[in-house]
Length: 340
Ligand code: PLP
Ligand code: COI
Image 1 (cartoon, rainbow, N blue to C red):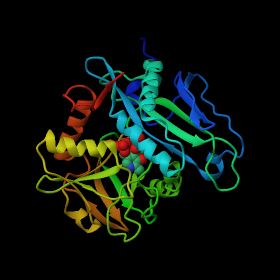
Image 2 (image 1 turned 90 degrees about the horizontal axis):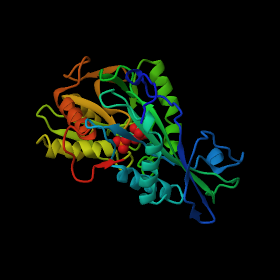
Image 3 (image 1 turned 45 degrees about the horizontal axis):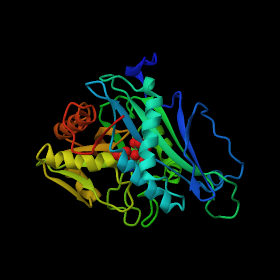
Image 4 (image 1 turned 180 degrees about the horizontal axis):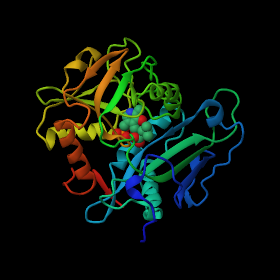
């Protein structure tokens, strides 16, 4: 398979149409078989539920070229499961989890020419998504849905790659207790747009959201979970019912414990303790692990000892082990790698 002529090393995190995308429709209570199409456009009724009431959810995963030249994805079963959970919370019919994985495989195969080569620093981002597609005007769920998967080659999510980020504590909340923070609903991202635009205008890379009820506990950012490292080398990540259960974070906690022999704790993290951590990072499919150098809380700065030029030592080990597993340099735990 001849690869496309793309400057892989200079890709940012942006959309580029590829040859094929997957589409399946739900109608009369059942999903159809689904098919690959070349058409990147979606034409819907003006009153489609997704336009009026934002009935949509999505997922994000990546395809990697391994050191020995295979194309793989990382734990797609967990994306399938999370998307089904998102769908149920939004009164949408879950796309069957086994069909989800099959559709991911088909879509990646059809776009093999766009899967960045090993060592290029780029990956193929895979975006499954689903929306209510028929006309609805009273507030109620749609009866018809479309499930799609698009792919696009991407580089680092944050400009500057592995350079430590500066983030701020947001004045806005991301998710209410008992709300939708734990699912990947499009609406969670719509309401974060104002906060991210103003953060960027003020020179910050991202927002740290605190728990909406007490504003004392660390939740997550707009697009990634947090991991912290204590001064004695324990990896700590916030536990909350209103954050997205990041697959990267769950994998990193496993890697910390079982590959690196570190202590790993998932627990409530109070903002007051953040100043005592040695390292901080943002983790997610898009973010991978992006180090945080500084957190600004209304003018008060928390500067991590790991500094503003490099990843902290534990963050770096986590990064190297996780990406090593994804790129086939390090043996993966059973079931983590799906070869395409
Ligand atoms: N938190 C939010 C709000 C996200 O959008 C994402 C991205 O998917 C994550 C966390 C990280 O989740 P994952 O590691 O499963 O990609
Ligand atoms: C991902 O990491 O896959 C996400 O969906 C996060 C988004 C901010 C790009």
